[in-house]
Image 1 (cartoon, rainbow, N blue to C red):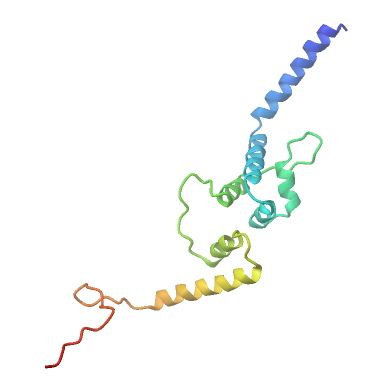
Image 2: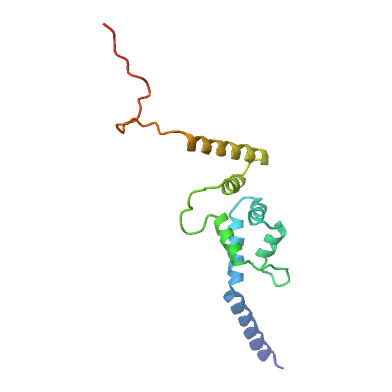
Length: 155
């Protein structure tokens, strides 16, 4: 076979490979994940793994795009959690309502030890309980109670 025909054949095979890779949704998800991890500080991959409930090597396999490396498919529910982790859901996040959501948020703060996270979580839960038990401080006429009681001067 002449070199010209081999070149045409190889160019066609390369084109098919590139098209297959570019049209693969998993490939696009891997590129997104690589990009997001590259933008963030060291240790983010481990935090993401913990957030997803998988081992860190699973996240590494999710990001592999080289044909010779082991890969792991990114499931739809995992992708939603990944977007949530990177705060990229496209809409503002709703209110945080339960202890698990609060703990997840605290664990994402860089520099907090697990002890700090537990301490802050217990403080937040206590504040929430106090706020729920606290009666309204409004007076019957709808005006707030003054900070200091007004005293009449004596003659």
